[in-house]
Amino acid sequence: MTKQLQYGGLLAVGMAGIAGGFSVGGLLKRLRRPTPNQILNQVKRAFLKEAPIEGSWIEMTKAPLQKFAVRTDVYHGGITRYEDGTLVQYEFLADANTGSILDIYRL
Image 1 (tube, one colour):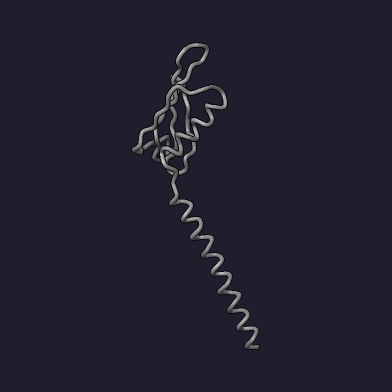
Image 2 (cartoon, helix red, strand yellow; image 1 turned 135 degrees about the horizontal axis):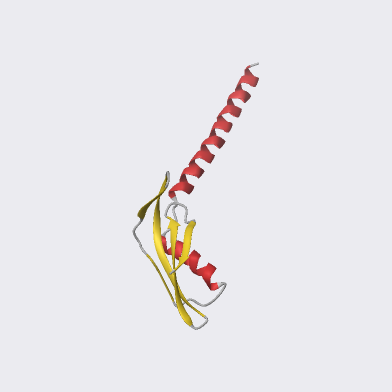
């Protein structure tokens, strides 16, 4: 009976360790936020699939954004490229916490 208790205790400790590992892994993933340059490179790669880029920029400071009940911090950026011989500018908003592109619009 004591061996069963020992194995049960080891099993409980092992399961707690695994659960703790997942918790720490999730925390580290949340703490590893993308840099503004990483976000800009992501947008540039997407635009380069269609045409060459003339210029690009991103603000290095986060700006608060609230849309209805949702609040987050964002980075503003932009891309410039030629389309049919005309210089066209785009701006984008990216979530500062996840790097997700929230909006891209042509100026």
